[in-house]
Length: 108
Image 1 (cartoon, rainbow, N blue to C red):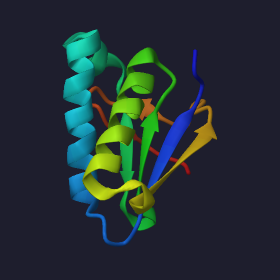
Image 2: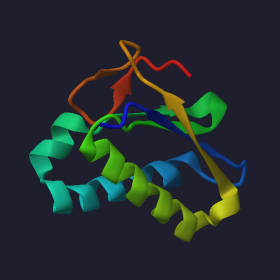
Image 3: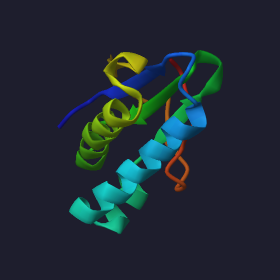
Image 4: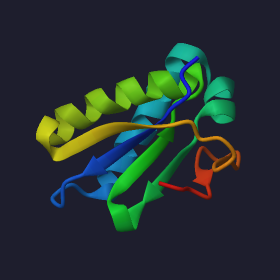
């Protein structure tokens, strides 16, 4: 199983709201593959506006699939040079899912 949190960092010309909308679209696509319940339970993310980043918990199959879809959607919408992807390691106890698909309490 993957044990990474994935950080997507965005160029200044990319709207974080639009990037988050792309992540939500990736979540819908992931639901089609793995089911709504799995996504509701296992997909967690955090929008770090001051750092112009979105962190996605990739430790589950759901997160791993969503990250792959999200990456492709970003490349299509904004271009490959508009964002960077970095695997930053295990979330440990730093992240707590709150049932809404968002991570509460992020450390980057």
